[in-house]
Length: 243
Image 1 (tube, rainbow, N blue to C red):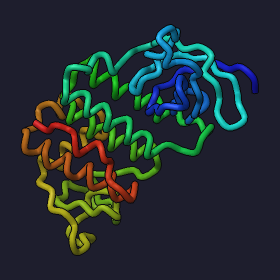
Image 2 (cartoon, one colour):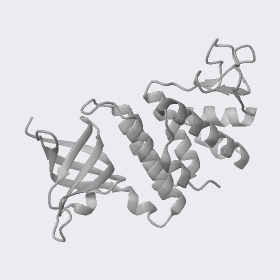
Image 3 (cartoon, rainbow, N blue to C red):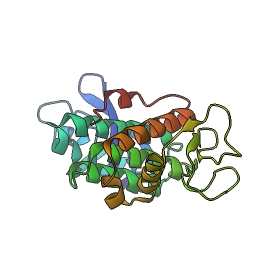
Image 4 (cartoon, rainbow, N blue to C red):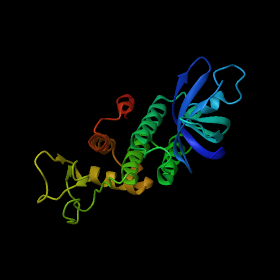
């Protein structure tokens, strides 16, 4: 494959040797890419700071045997810089990265929807400055939908009976009617169910008009759905500041 260019978001990085760094990126054209950036920890590195998590970059890479090699990187948007002094936004951004990482397809399999969703989520969090909790929950729900889990909060996810309903079953992926409600299904007030639906659809005006208690309940449902489908919780969610 040789040299190729792509744009991507740095999901995580870790040190390699004395001066190198391994980065994991979600790219527009090539899906998940793991690459080594050689010498970026030296003080004279040209692009070391551009390869930090939450950076949106345009880069050139060279195909390697196990890891590609970053040969050039230009910043498109340093999202981490925008939230460096804001704990709530920074931790929400970290949770967004971890959620994306856990839902990624296999390496080299393009996922343009997840890529656009990730860039859009970080933009909403840092540039548009929307409520970080709402951004995080909206990203989680939409990322589940992109991954094929398709949560639903209007019609019953088992029989299709029209809503509104007041129970969520994790194994069904969303709202269930009284006839389909299994033992142990969580009771969800109508206001919270409505908020979950508008977060999934992207109706920000309705989401931002919601009450704080409904947002807290919605966050609990989103966290439970992520834990169910990922078979483990998103660890960064424990650090997120909920208001």
